[in-house]
Length: 138
Ligand code: 9L3
Ligand code: MG
Image (cartoon, rainbow, N blue to C red; front, side, top):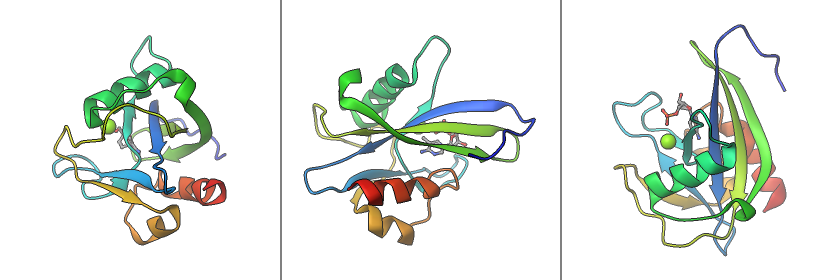
């Protein structure tokens, strides 16, 4: 892990949603947001009084319309990346059991990608180094 800079820390949580063929769902950041066009693991900011797990369950329902439970989320690895104005800490959970079919609820494009094919996609600098752990696992 890299050392923490003096920047404010932003705690974000992300998910590798895995299908029966070992593909993982990526979401494309929409126009108008920072890092627009990049393919990321779905997730978002951990709000005050949330745990990473409860934040991720909320984000997955808001962004994809799926439901899951803490017991279905396993911690895999985490990102630590200094952006210009904040330092992002982002645990990545893996989830194979959820209810519903992921749908784009916020206008973001979605696609299922094999981890080894992710290196051909533009990913945010925090997300890209996490792919190695998925390649090892899946
Ligand atoms: N971020 C990076 N990778 C991800 C996620 C979900 C988020 N897989 C970064 C992008 C933003 C910050 O975290 O700089 C906050 O995310 P958002 O609230 O703009 O989606
Ligand atoms: Mg988000």
